[in-house]
Image (cartoon, rainbow, N blue to C red; front, side, top):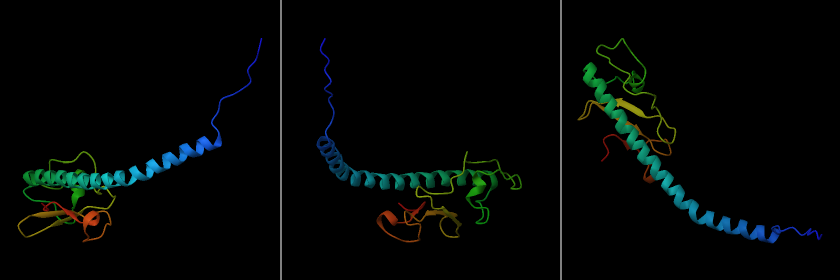
Length: 140
């Protein structure tokens, strides 16, 4: 009976070649993926703002008004029986931050629209352009 003690294994050179190839592929794919991630965050924030707007309209239909600045958006998910006609909560869970974790800005207005909901975008600061641009309910 002959015993074969030879084992097949990767050499350090083969491992380095594989790691180098994976690194090259990752450097080509990662920038495209990160661009898609930012686009997805913008779309998510726009969808959340639309959802908040719909909930605000439901609040208005029940109470005859939109929430005050001091009541804010939290009145949409926290029951408040002190408000006449309130039939909420209007959202099943809190939506108080955009896709980047920055708080939504809710303000009542006296112009063409009764309220405004804004995300300050990726940088969390008012103004900005491209990925840092503000996103508002009234943007087209």
